[in-house]
Image 1 (cartoon, one colour):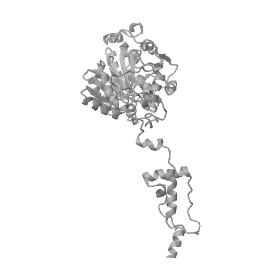
Image 2 (image 1 turned 45 degrees about the vertical axis):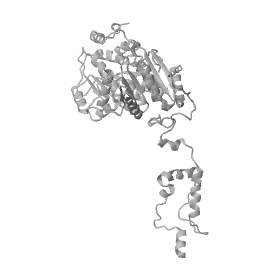
Image 3 (image 1 turned 120 degrees about the vertical axis):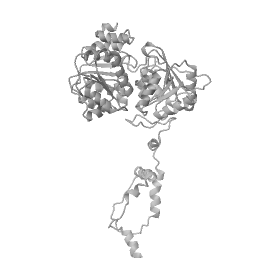
Image 4 (image 1 turned 90 degrees about the horizontal axis):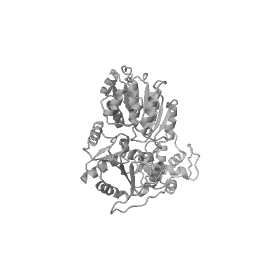
Length: 489
Protein backbone atom coordinates (compact mmCIF):
# COMPACT_ATOMS: atom_id res chain seq x y z
CA UNK A 1 0.00 0.00 0.00
CA UNK A 2 1.17 3.54 -0.78
CA UNK A 3 0.37 6.87 0.91
CA UNK A 4 -1.77 7.75 -2.12
CA UNK A 5 -4.17 4.92 -1.15
CA UNK A 6 -4.93 6.44 2.28
CA UNK A 7 -7.11 9.36 1.13
CA UNK A 8 -4.60 12.16 1.76
CA UNK A 9 -4.60 15.34 -0.31
CA UNK A 10 -2.15 16.03 -3.10
CA UNK A 11 -0.38 18.72 -1.04
CA UNK A 12 0.26 16.33 1.86
CA UNK A 13 1.37 13.55 -0.49
CA UNK A 14 3.85 15.93 -2.09
CA UNK A 15 5.26 16.85 1.34
CA UNK A 16 5.57 13.18 2.28
CA UNK A 17 7.40 12.46 -0.96
CA UNK A 18 9.72 15.41 -0.35
CA UNK A 19 10.54 13.94 3.08
CA UNK A 20 11.66 10.72 1.39
CA UNK A 21 8.89 8.36 2.53
CA UNK A 22 7.42 5.89 0.07
CA UNK A 23 5.22 3.45 2.00
CA UNK A 24 3.24 3.93 5.21
CA UNK A 25 4.05 1.98 8.35
CA UNK A 26 1.36 -0.35 9.79
CA UNK A 27 0.13 2.22 12.33
CA UNK A 28 -0.09 4.88 9.59
CA UNK A 29 -1.84 2.51 7.20
CA UNK A 30 -4.55 1.73 9.74
CA UNK A 31 -4.91 5.06 11.58
CA UNK A 32 -4.87 7.67 8.80
CA UNK A 33 -8.14 6.62 7.07
CA UNK A 34 -9.91 6.37 10.46
CA UNK A 35 -8.77 9.85 11.51
CA UNK A 36 -9.91 11.29 8.17
CA UNK A 37 -13.36 9.76 8.86
CA UNK A 38 -13.58 11.77 12.09
CA UNK A 39 -13.60 8.77 14.45
CA UNK A 40 -11.81 8.49 17.78
CA UNK A 41 -8.67 6.35 17.75
CA UNK A 42 -7.07 4.27 20.49
CA UNK A 43 -3.63 3.32 19.19
CA UNK A 44 -1.14 0.99 20.85
CA UNK A 45 2.19 0.81 19.04
CA UNK A 46 5.79 0.53 20.10
CA UNK A 47 8.18 3.42 19.70
CA UNK A 48 9.66 3.98 16.28
CA UNK A 49 6.60 2.84 14.32
CA UNK A 50 5.61 6.23 12.92
CA UNK A 51 2.87 7.19 15.39
CA UNK A 52 3.55 10.90 14.93
CA UNK A 53 2.85 10.89 11.21
CA UNK A 54 -0.25 8.76 11.74
CA UNK A 55 -2.02 11.73 13.31
CA UNK A 56 -0.16 14.76 11.87
CA UNK A 57 -0.82 13.85 8.21
CA UNK A 58 -4.63 13.54 8.46
CA UNK A 59 -4.84 16.51 10.84
CA UNK A 60 -3.18 18.76 8.26
CA UNK A 61 -5.82 17.81 5.70
CA UNK A 62 -8.66 18.31 8.18
CA UNK A 63 -7.34 21.76 9.17
CA UNK A 64 -6.88 22.87 5.56
CA UNK A 65 -10.35 24.40 5.64
CA UNK A 66 -11.17 26.96 8.28
CA UNK A 67 -9.29 29.60 10.21
CA UNK A 68 -8.20 29.98 13.84
CA UNK A 69 -9.28 32.86 16.05
CA UNK A 70 -7.20 34.68 18.63
CA UNK A 71 -6.42 32.57 21.73
CA UNK A 72 -8.70 29.81 20.42
CA UNK A 73 -6.68 26.92 18.96
CA UNK A 74 -8.49 24.49 16.69
CA UNK A 75 -6.51 21.42 17.73
CA UNK A 76 -4.54 20.45 20.83
CA UNK A 77 -1.67 17.97 21.01
CA UNK A 78 -0.46 17.03 24.51
CA UNK A 79 3.03 15.59 24.95
CA UNK A 80 4.81 14.51 28.14
CA UNK A 81 8.20 16.15 27.41
CA UNK A 82 9.57 19.22 25.71
CA UNK A 83 11.61 17.10 23.32
CA UNK A 84 8.57 15.15 22.15
CA UNK A 85 6.55 18.34 21.75
CA UNK A 86 9.33 19.83 19.62
CA UNK A 87 9.43 16.64 17.54
CA UNK A 88 5.69 16.90 16.79
CA UNK A 89 6.04 20.59 15.93
CA UNK A 90 8.82 19.68 13.49
CA UNK A 91 6.57 17.04 11.90
CA UNK A 92 3.84 19.63 11.29
CA UNK A 93 6.44 21.91 9.68
CA UNK A 94 7.71 19.15 7.39
CA UNK A 95 4.36 17.70 6.31
CA UNK A 96 2.42 20.97 6.31
CA UNK A 97 4.83 23.06 4.26
CA UNK A 98 2.35 23.29 1.37
CA UNK A 99 -0.40 24.56 3.69
CA UNK A 100 -0.74 27.85 5.53
CA UNK A 101 -1.31 26.43 8.98
CA UNK A 102 -0.13 28.21 12.11
CA UNK A 103 1.10 26.47 15.22
CA UNK A 104 2.37 27.27 18.71
CA UNK A 105 4.68 25.22 20.89
CA UNK A 106 3.97 25.65 24.61
CA UNK A 107 6.76 24.17 26.72
CA UNK A 108 8.62 25.19 29.84
CA UNK A 109 12.12 26.62 29.90
CA UNK A 110 11.49 29.25 27.19
CA UNK A 111 10.00 32.73 27.17
CA UNK A 112 6.32 32.69 28.02
CA UNK A 113 5.87 36.12 26.42
CA UNK A 114 6.66 34.83 22.92
CA UNK A 115 4.18 32.00 23.41
CA UNK A 116 1.46 34.42 24.50
CA UNK A 117 2.02 36.58 21.41
CA UNK A 118 1.62 33.55 19.14
CA UNK A 119 -1.64 32.64 20.86
CA UNK A 120 -2.92 36.20 20.44
CA UNK A 121 -2.52 35.88 16.68
CA UNK A 122 -4.47 32.60 16.62
CA UNK A 123 -3.11 29.12 15.97
CA UNK A 124 -4.47 26.09 14.16
CA UNK A 125 -2.33 23.59 16.06
CA UNK A 126 -1.39 23.96 19.71
CA UNK A 127 1.34 21.55 20.89
CA UNK A 128 1.93 21.66 24.63
CA UNK A 129 3.19 19.96 27.73
CA UNK A 130 0.54 19.77 30.48
CA UNK A 131 2.27 22.07 32.96
CA UNK A 132 2.77 25.03 30.64
CA UNK A 133 -0.67 24.48 29.14
CA UNK A 134 -2.39 24.86 32.53
CA UNK A 135 -0.16 27.80 33.43
CA UNK A 136 -1.25 29.79 30.37
CA UNK A 137 -4.88 28.80 30.79
CA UNK A 138 -4.90 30.08 34.36
CA UNK A 139 -3.45 33.36 33.11
CA UNK A 140 -6.41 33.68 30.77
CA UNK A 141 -4.29 33.38 27.63
CA UNK A 142 -6.03 30.36 26.11
CA UNK A 143 -9.66 29.58 25.35
CA UNK A 144 -10.29 25.90 24.67
CA UNK A 145 -13.90 26.12 23.56
CA UNK A 146 -13.02 25.81 19.86
CA UNK A 147 -10.82 22.69 20.02
CA UNK A 148 -12.07 20.18 17.45
CA UNK A 149 -9.31 17.54 17.72
CA UNK A 150 -7.46 16.42 20.85
CA UNK A 151 -4.34 14.26 20.64
CA UNK A 152 -2.94 12.61 23.78
CA UNK A 153 0.41 11.13 22.83
CA UNK A 154 2.60 8.76 24.90
CA UNK A 155 -0.12 8.36 27.52
CA UNK A 156 1.80 5.75 29.50
CA UNK A 157 4.71 8.17 29.88
CA UNK A 158 2.23 10.78 31.11
CA UNK A 159 1.20 8.27 33.75
CA UNK A 160 4.79 7.60 34.81
CA UNK A 161 5.55 11.31 35.09
CA UNK A 162 2.47 12.07 37.19
CA UNK A 163 0.64 14.18 34.58
CA UNK A 164 -2.66 12.28 34.62
CA UNK A 165 -4.44 14.73 37.01
CA UNK A 166 -3.38 17.60 34.72
CA UNK A 167 -4.60 15.70 31.66
CA UNK A 168 -7.96 15.03 33.29
CA UNK A 169 -8.29 18.70 34.15
CA UNK A 170 -7.43 19.83 30.62
CA UNK A 171 -9.87 17.36 29.05
CA UNK A 172 -12.56 18.68 31.37
CA UNK A 173 -12.08 22.15 29.84
CA UNK A 174 -12.58 20.99 26.25
CA UNK A 175 -15.86 20.74 24.32
CA UNK A 176 -17.60 17.41 24.82
CA UNK A 177 -18.13 17.07 21.08
CA UNK A 178 -14.66 16.57 19.66
CA UNK A 179 -12.43 13.98 18.01
CA UNK A 180 -9.90 12.37 20.35
CA UNK A 181 -6.79 10.49 19.25
CA UNK A 182 -5.18 8.55 22.10
CA UNK A 183 -1.79 6.88 21.64
CA UNK A 184 0.30 4.83 24.03
CA UNK A 185 3.23 2.44 23.68
CA UNK A 186 1.82 0.23 26.44
CA UNK A 187 -1.70 -0.30 27.72
CA UNK A 188 -1.70 -0.84 31.50
CA UNK A 189 -5.06 -0.83 33.34
CA UNK A 190 -4.74 2.85 34.34
CA UNK A 191 -4.32 3.89 30.70
CA UNK A 192 -7.25 1.73 29.66
CA UNK A 193 -9.40 3.48 32.27
CA UNK A 194 -8.44 6.90 30.88
CA UNK A 195 -9.15 5.78 27.33
CA UNK A 196 -12.60 4.61 28.34
CA UNK A 197 -13.27 8.00 29.95
CA UNK A 198 -11.93 10.20 27.13
CA UNK A 199 -12.92 8.32 23.97
CA UNK A 200 -16.28 7.68 22.36
CA UNK A 201 -16.64 4.46 20.37
CA UNK A 202 -12.96 4.46 19.35
CA UNK A 203 -11.33 2.39 16.68
CA UNK A 204 -8.66 0.33 18.47
CA UNK A 205 -5.45 -0.12 16.51
CA UNK A 206 -2.66 -2.37 17.75
CA UNK A 207 0.23 -2.94 15.37
CA UNK A 208 2.39 -5.02 17.72
CA UNK A 209 1.93 -6.85 21.01
CA UNK A 210 1.91 -4.30 23.85
CA UNK A 211 5.38 -3.50 25.13
CA UNK A 212 7.24 -5.68 22.64
CA UNK A 213 10.62 -4.52 21.34
CA UNK A 214 11.26 -4.33 17.63
CA UNK A 215 12.43 -7.57 16.05
CA UNK A 216 15.31 -5.71 14.41
CA UNK A 217 16.97 -5.00 17.78
CA UNK A 218 19.53 -7.57 18.93
CA UNK A 219 19.43 -7.65 22.74
CA UNK A 220 22.09 -8.83 25.18
CA UNK A 221 22.71 -8.62 28.92
CA UNK A 222 26.01 -8.53 30.82
CA UNK A 223 25.88 -9.34 34.55
CA UNK A 224 28.84 -7.95 36.50
CA UNK A 225 29.54 -6.42 39.89
CA UNK A 226 28.48 -2.75 40.19
CA UNK A 227 32.06 -1.46 40.38
CA UNK A 228 32.87 -3.19 37.06
CA UNK A 229 30.10 -1.58 35.02
CA UNK A 230 32.03 1.48 33.84
CA UNK A 231 34.95 -0.64 32.65
CA UNK A 232 32.60 -3.07 30.87
CA UNK A 233 30.77 -0.18 29.21
CA UNK A 234 34.02 1.24 27.86
CA UNK A 235 35.06 -2.19 26.57
CA UNK A 236 31.73 -2.60 24.76
CA UNK A 237 31.99 0.83 23.17
CA UNK A 238 35.51 0.05 21.95
CA UNK A 239 34.69 -3.44 20.66
CA UNK A 240 31.37 -2.61 18.98
CA UNK A 241 31.02 -0.62 15.80
CA UNK A 242 29.23 2.25 17.55
CA UNK A 243 28.16 4.96 15.15
CA UNK A 244 26.09 6.74 17.81
CA UNK A 245 24.55 5.53 21.03
CA UNK A 246 22.33 6.40 23.95
CA UNK A 247 23.49 5.37 27.43
CA UNK A 248 20.64 5.26 29.94
CA UNK A 249 20.96 5.75 33.70
CA UNK A 250 18.15 5.54 36.24
CA UNK A 251 19.09 8.71 38.11
CA UNK A 252 20.01 12.20 36.95
CA UNK A 253 22.95 12.29 39.35
CA UNK A 254 24.38 9.14 37.78
CA UNK A 255 24.01 10.69 34.32
CA UNK A 256 26.43 13.46 35.29
CA UNK A 257 28.81 11.08 37.06
CA UNK A 258 29.01 8.66 34.12
CA UNK A 259 29.35 11.53 31.66
CA UNK A 260 32.38 12.87 33.51
CA UNK A 261 33.90 9.38 33.76
CA UNK A 262 33.61 8.72 30.04
CA UNK A 263 35.04 12.15 29.22
CA UNK A 264 38.07 11.43 31.42
CA UNK A 265 38.73 8.38 29.26
CA UNK A 266 38.70 10.46 26.07
CA UNK A 267 35.27 9.50 24.71
CA UNK A 268 33.10 11.92 22.72
CA UNK A 269 30.14 12.17 25.10
CA UNK A 270 27.55 14.58 26.48
CA UNK A 271 24.81 14.43 29.12
CA UNK A 272 21.05 15.00 28.84
CA UNK A 273 18.51 15.00 31.68
CA UNK A 274 15.52 16.96 32.94
CA UNK A 275 17.41 19.25 35.33
CA UNK A 276 19.41 20.87 32.53
CA UNK A 277 18.27 24.31 31.28
CA UNK A 278 16.14 24.08 28.16
CA UNK A 279 18.60 25.97 25.89
CA UNK A 280 21.36 23.57 26.93
CA UNK A 281 19.15 20.52 26.30
CA UNK A 282 18.17 21.83 22.86
CA UNK A 283 21.80 22.55 21.95
CA UNK A 284 22.92 19.08 23.11
CA UNK A 285 20.18 17.32 21.13
CA UNK A 286 21.00 19.31 18.01
CA UNK A 287 24.69 18.45 18.27
CA UNK A 288 23.81 14.78 18.75
CA UNK A 289 21.50 14.76 15.74
CA UNK A 290 24.23 16.39 13.64
CA UNK A 291 26.73 13.68 14.69
CA UNK A 292 28.88 16.22 16.53
CA UNK A 293 28.49 14.00 19.62
CA UNK A 294 28.78 10.23 19.36
CA UNK A 295 27.57 9.18 22.83
CA UNK A 296 24.73 10.67 24.84
CA UNK A 297 24.28 9.72 28.51
CA UNK A 298 20.66 10.38 29.41
CA UNK A 299 17.78 9.70 31.76
CA UNK A 300 14.45 8.14 30.84
CA UNK A 301 12.98 11.59 30.11
CA UNK A 302 14.97 11.54 26.88
CA UNK A 303 13.87 8.02 25.96
CA UNK A 304 10.74 9.25 24.19
CA UNK A 305 12.10 12.57 23.00
CA UNK A 306 14.67 11.39 20.49
CA UNK A 307 13.76 10.34 16.97
CA UNK A 308 17.00 9.44 15.21
CA UNK A 309 16.43 6.75 12.62
CA UNK A 310 20.05 5.62 12.28
CA UNK A 311 20.81 5.07 15.98
CA UNK A 312 23.19 2.11 16.08
CA UNK A 313 23.34 1.22 19.79
CA UNK A 314 21.57 1.60 23.13
CA UNK A 315 23.32 0.83 26.41
CA UNK A 316 21.36 0.41 29.64
CA UNK A 317 23.98 1.30 32.23
CA UNK A 318 21.27 0.65 34.84
CA UNK A 319 18.49 -1.92 34.57
CA UNK A 320 15.26 0.12 34.45
CA UNK A 321 13.04 -0.09 37.53
CA UNK A 322 9.89 -0.42 35.40
CA UNK A 323 9.92 -3.14 32.78
CA UNK A 324 8.07 -0.93 30.26
CA UNK A 325 10.97 1.54 30.30
CA UNK A 326 13.22 -1.16 28.89
CA UNK A 327 11.08 -1.33 25.74
CA UNK A 328 11.07 2.45 25.40
CA UNK A 329 14.83 2.65 25.82
CA UNK A 330 15.85 0.03 23.30
CA UNK A 331 13.16 1.32 20.94
CA UNK A 332 15.53 4.20 20.14
CA UNK A 333 17.53 1.81 17.94
CA UNK A 334 16.40 -0.57 15.20
CA UNK A 335 13.94 2.00 13.86
CA UNK A 336 12.32 2.00 10.42
CA UNK A 337 13.45 -1.56 9.70
CA UNK A 338 17.13 -0.93 10.45
CA UNK A 339 19.16 -3.25 12.67
CA UNK A 340 20.21 -2.13 16.13
CA UNK A 341 22.07 -3.41 19.18
CA UNK A 342 20.99 -3.06 22.81
CA UNK A 343 23.21 -4.00 25.76
CA UNK A 344 22.03 -4.05 29.38
CA UNK A 345 24.55 -3.95 32.22
CA UNK A 346 23.06 -5.64 35.29
CA UNK A 347 24.34 -6.12 38.81
CA UNK A 348 23.60 -9.42 40.61
CA UNK A 349 20.93 -7.78 42.77
CA UNK A 350 18.99 -6.65 39.67
CA UNK A 351 17.58 -10.16 39.22
CA UNK A 352 13.95 -9.34 39.95
CA UNK A 353 14.01 -6.35 37.56
CA UNK A 354 15.51 -8.44 34.76
CA UNK A 355 12.92 -11.14 35.47
CA UNK A 356 10.10 -8.58 35.13
CA UNK A 357 11.51 -7.38 31.80
CA UNK A 358 11.77 -10.90 30.42
CA UNK A 359 8.19 -11.63 31.48
CA UNK A 360 7.02 -8.47 29.73
CA UNK A 361 8.79 -9.09 26.43
CA UNK A 362 8.01 -12.81 26.54
CA UNK A 363 11.53 -14.16 26.12
CA UNK A 364 14.87 -14.23 27.97
CA UNK A 365 17.57 -11.69 27.18
CA UNK A 366 20.62 -13.58 25.85
CA UNK A 367 23.74 -13.21 28.03
CA UNK A 368 26.87 -11.70 26.55
CA UNK A 369 30.43 -12.50 27.59
CA UNK A 370 32.91 -9.61 27.50
CA UNK A 371 36.47 -10.87 26.96
CA UNK A 372 38.64 -10.90 30.12
CA UNK A 373 35.72 -9.91 32.34
CA UNK A 374 34.32 -12.26 34.97
CA UNK A 375 30.54 -12.41 34.82
CA UNK A 376 28.28 -12.82 37.85
CA UNK A 377 24.93 -14.52 38.44
CA UNK A 378 21.64 -12.76 39.05
CA UNK A 379 19.94 -13.15 42.42
CA UNK A 380 16.18 -13.10 42.75
CA UNK A 381 15.62 -12.77 46.51
CA UNK A 382 12.84 -10.33 47.30
CA UNK A 383 14.78 -8.70 50.10
CA UNK A 384 17.80 -7.89 47.94
CA UNK A 385 18.20 -5.38 45.19
CA UNK A 386 17.79 -1.67 45.01
CA UNK A 387 15.39 -1.31 47.93
CA UNK A 388 13.84 1.83 49.26
CA UNK A 389 10.83 3.75 48.11
CA UNK A 390 10.37 5.96 45.12
CA UNK A 391 9.47 9.54 45.54
CA UNK A 392 6.19 9.74 43.61
CA UNK A 393 3.60 7.02 43.89
CA UNK A 394 5.98 4.77 45.81
CA UNK A 395 7.94 3.94 42.67
CA UNK A 396 11.50 4.50 43.67
CA UNK A 397 13.29 7.59 42.52
CA UNK A 398 16.54 8.18 44.31
CA UNK A 399 17.35 4.56 45.03
CA UNK A 400 20.82 3.75 46.21
CA UNK A 401 22.85 1.22 44.26
CA UNK A 402 24.17 -2.00 45.68
CA UNK A 403 20.99 -2.73 47.62
CA UNK A 404 21.28 0.16 50.11
CA UNK A 405 18.16 2.24 50.55
CA UNK A 406 18.55 5.99 51.01
CA UNK A 407 19.18 7.20 54.53
CA UNK A 408 15.65 8.52 54.99
CA UNK A 409 14.26 5.06 54.24
CA UNK A 410 16.52 3.07 56.60
CA UNK A 411 14.33 3.40 59.73
CA UNK A 412 11.46 1.82 57.77
CA UNK A 413 13.60 -0.94 56.31
CA UNK A 414 15.06 -2.09 59.64
CA UNK A 415 13.12 -3.93 62.36
CA UNK A 416 12.15 -1.99 65.45
CA UNK A 417 14.46 -2.59 68.42
CA UNK A 418 12.50 -2.84 71.63
CA UNK A 419 15.27 -3.35 74.18
CA UNK A 420 16.67 0.19 74.21
CA UNK A 421 13.14 1.55 74.41
CA UNK A 422 12.38 -0.62 77.46
CA UNK A 423 15.46 0.48 79.38
CA UNK A 424 14.68 4.19 79.15
CA UNK A 425 11.60 4.12 81.41
CA UNK A 426 13.46 1.96 83.94
CA UNK A 427 16.37 4.39 83.97
CA UNK A 428 13.96 7.22 84.51
CA UNK A 429 12.27 5.52 87.45
CA UNK A 430 15.54 4.95 89.34
CA UNK A 431 16.30 8.66 89.44
CA UNK A 432 12.81 10.01 89.93
CA UNK A 433 12.11 10.97 93.60
CA UNK A 434 9.02 9.05 94.63
CA UNK A 435 7.85 9.21 98.26
CA UNK A 436 6.37 6.13 99.88
CA UNK A 437 2.89 7.63 100.21
CA UNK A 438 1.63 10.51 98.16
CA UNK A 439 -1.78 11.88 97.20
CA UNK A 440 -3.01 11.04 93.70
CA UNK A 441 -1.29 13.21 91.09
CA UNK A 442 -3.27 15.91 89.34
CA UNK A 443 -2.32 14.63 85.91
CA UNK A 444 -3.16 11.24 84.41
CA UNK A 445 -0.24 8.83 84.25
CA UNK A 446 0.68 7.53 80.81
CA UNK A 447 1.12 3.77 80.43
CA UNK A 448 2.98 2.52 77.40
CA UNK A 449 3.31 -1.01 76.04
CA UNK A 450 6.42 -2.29 74.33
CA UNK A 451 5.30 -1.20 70.85
CA UNK A 452 4.42 2.30 72.06
CA UNK A 453 7.60 2.59 74.06
CA UNK A 454 9.62 2.09 70.89
CA UNK A 455 8.26 5.32 69.40
CA UNK A 456 9.60 7.72 72.09
CA UNK A 457 12.89 5.87 71.90
CA UNK A 458 13.09 6.40 68.15
CA UNK A 459 12.21 10.10 68.49
CA UNK A 460 14.63 10.56 71.36
CA UNK A 461 17.63 10.20 69.09
CA UNK A 462 16.42 12.91 66.69
CA UNK A 463 14.15 15.24 68.65
CA UNK A 464 14.98 14.88 72.30
CA UNK A 465 12.35 12.26 73.17
CA UNK A 466 8.61 12.20 73.57
CA UNK A 467 8.79 13.19 77.25
CA UNK A 468 10.63 16.41 76.42
CA UNK A 469 7.73 17.44 74.23
CA UNK A 470 5.03 16.41 76.71
CA UNK A 471 6.20 18.09 79.93
CA UNK A 472 6.45 21.80 79.24
CA UNK A 473 5.61 23.35 82.64
CA UNK A 474 3.40 22.97 85.70
CA UNK A 475 1.54 26.27 85.45
CA UNK A 476 -0.42 27.03 88.61
CA UNK A 477 -0.79 23.36 89.59
CA UNK A 478 2.07 22.14 91.75
CA UNK A 479 2.42 18.35 91.99
CA UNK A 480 1.87 16.99 95.49
CA UNK A 481 5.32 15.36 95.83
CA UNK A 482 7.04 18.72 95.25
CA UNK A 483 4.80 20.36 97.78
CA UNK A 484 5.73 17.71 100.41
CA UNK A 485 9.45 18.21 99.76
CA UNK A 486 9.03 21.94 100.16
CA UNK A 487 7.19 21.54 103.47
CA UNK A 488 10.00 19.28 104.81
CA UNK A 489 12.59 21.94 104.08
